[in-house]
Length: 123
Image (cartoon, rainbow, N blue to C red):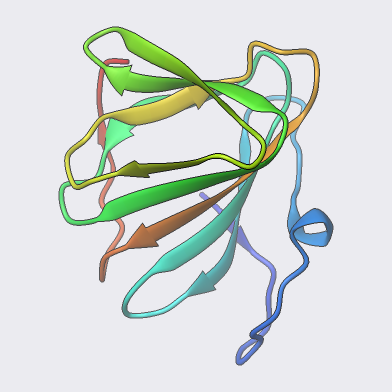
């Protein structure tokens, strides 16, 4: 379950102030949720994973702000995504990632659909 820590009608956000980290697992914080999208910031420590999954109803766009992730593409394929890069997972495309590096990773997830359905998948 994600934390939501912003206030209604807020339009400008500071990612570094909103990101949270957990010693146990990748941490997600919802920034804004509307009828059209959900925007969240993720904090991923070394060794932590965002399990592979799909969204049948919407596109999930990840924007890496800091660090680098080994990104799951499905069918056992992986690719490194780094700060400044964007990945777009269309509906039902497998995505997820693991931080195999030594630094914390921060990324934004912009999910475009009226409801957030998550379906576990194989990396």
